[in-house]
Length: 231
Image 1: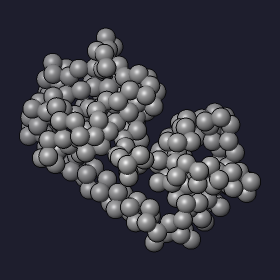
Image 2 (image 1 turned 90 degrees about the horizontal axis):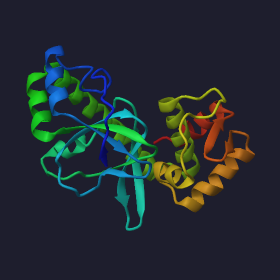
Image 3 (image 1 turned 60 degrees about the vertical axis):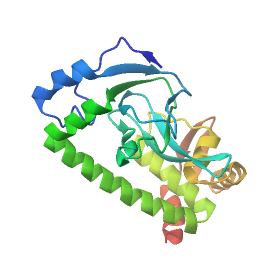
């Protein structure tokens, strides 16, 4: 990671949009803007916690080890989102890794300053608590789905989730490019199973593929796959 000369606008991230306006000069004095290259880790699972990160530009995957050689993508973070907050549990290590999917600008705040921000900015603390509650509910539902859903339904769920989070671009493609391996990791599927399932969905005219880009052709049928398999 290298320090980015570009300075954020103090109006984009989760903290800046909810903190007291008088607190922003303190953020300016304590933050570091970092330029992260595509494929570069921001922090790694098991690393000691040093601070909290916010995404200013770019898309980030948050992922954990799954078995010995696989990974499970927990979520994708984009402009304004918080990273590293799972390290607030008191264990003093990051329980997941964060890796840039494209060149990104990240804002870093050291932990002692972040904790001061929590104490002083009540609205931010309350919204962070609600964010944690929402993430917990999503995580519990996702774990149930990984256990009970067949691969085809899990892949359909992953595609719908990506479309809902990132929307579609002017050409109708979901507005994020993922490798097949990343899509497999987000679906909780083996690469070979993901490859076969994608081919089936293309054959059934539910999606179309162009390189790393994907278009949903029949969202209703994808949702039907999910609803029939939900636990």
